[in-house]
Length: 219
Image (cartoon, rainbow, N blue to C red; front, side, top):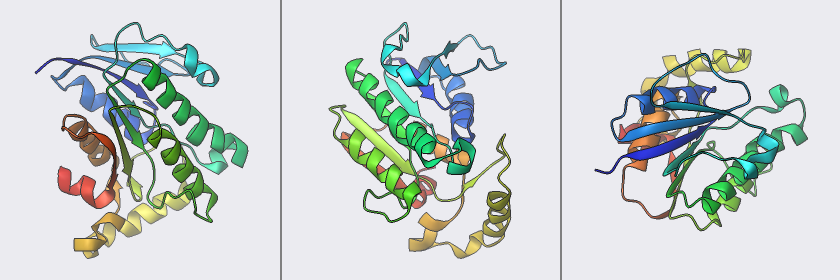
C-alpha cells in the first residue's frame, strides 16, 4: 500500500494527542505534520511541527503533499471566554482548514465534532457544531468523515471539574449502554482516534458521520 502523509490540527487536545501517538507508530504514514500555536516538546523522525497563526490558515505551507487531514480542533465557551471566541475555533478554524484541504487536493478530511450536532439545535454548542458540519459537507473533497463522540474519557491538560465528575459516573454505569444505547456511552479518546485512523484507511466516498456507538464497534 502506498505510504501517506498526514496533517493534524489540534494535536495538543485529548483526541488530537492520541491521534499523534497512534499515527507516529502507524506504518501506513511516513510523515506526520502538526500545526500548533506553540511547538511541542516532542521529537520523532516522522514528525514535523509547524507553528502557525490559526487566523491565517489559508497561508499554511505544509512543505509536502498531504493525503489525510485529521482535525481535532475544539474548545469550550468557558475556556474560549465568549461565544464569539468559541465560534472562531469550532467553526471558523475548522471550516478554513477544510477549505485549505480542498485547495491543496487533500484526499481525506476527518473531523471531530460532537454528539447532538445540528444546525437547527437550540443549544449554541450543538448548533455551532452542526453549522460546521453543514459547511464542510459542501466542500468538494473526495472523503469527508465526521466523528460525533459522546462524553470523552481521558486525561485532559485543562481542568474541567464537571466533566471529570461525569466521567466517573458514566464509567461506573457504562455496562447499561448496550445495543441502541451504545452511542450514548462515554468513549475514550484513544478509541475515537483509533476509529478515525481506521476510517481513513477504508474506501468511503462522500460525506460520512459516525456516532459513538459506531466508533466503538469499529475498534
